[in-house]
Length: 384
Ligand SMILES: *Cc1c(COP(=O)(O)O)cnc(C)c1O
Image: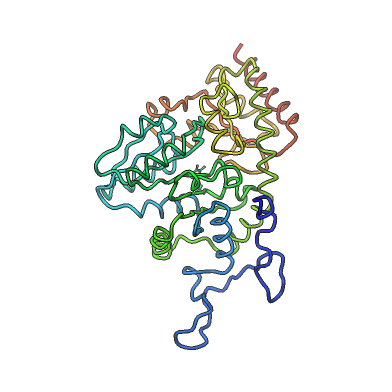
């Protein structure tokens, strides 16, 4: 069945007793046993919850994996995956990683003796060059946040398979509607479902999908032992949001493409990062491995002094962290999402103090252009 159909039907036909079209929310924390050794399949809600189970099955099917796991946040999902590694294991990670993942690696994994090397994963040769005898995994974001560098998933997948490395892909920016890393050799897909999957800026959640039963068994043990599971209400809210994912992703892309092509010609904007632009270095790779260029774009303004003015002047676009919702949001990565990354590393990744990131919502694109145009022109005038 087409993914659009699967998404529209999420949660339906899950409760044969009542025929409930929307999956019921099971708030019970514990479940009765008929007799010793007999279980309905549910004992205690950390171990398994019927509402969460519908969500976990759904994300596994959408990504084409064998099992899914729902966590209390995207970071809890990343943390659970990182627990698959041991002290003295070495990881290769994207250099322009989500700031929270970078912080987790530097402040927590290093402490238990896990080693890490950051490379530009859009340059395959730099991944090969970072390989050590103790390398156990590669962690990739594509496109990256916020400069939208595109990694060649097929090449990295083949390399990881040959070298017996676990390939983990943070698929938050794309969602399984537009990119399915397991098809390119990834072993694990991770989501901050807080973003496009939830889609309404109203639920914090993380998801992981495992390609094999072997890794799924380990992850299940980690999920149940650490206990950072997603609650039933939030599981339901996420399922509810995901039903419209296909429609939303199409409009996000349409608006982002239109805005990127407009910004490229704007007098106040010297640089635009969007994989949908033919001039973007990852354009061809993105075309091959994803069915969309996504709803995220970043751009540099002419002068860093313009940034505070723009953030103050926008009336429709909201100055806020996060992304992937129906509402367009503008972020200042150097100060917000990437504040934990040292300045020299930040600048080397293109996260300068002139860079703004836009999570393009599903509003009318002409309204968005008018708002941005007014803010950019105001900021230019203040400079002169
Ligand atoms: C937001 C985000 C995370 C962290 O997810 P939370 O739900 O905020 O914990 C991880 N990776 C990427 C790419 C993100 O955008």
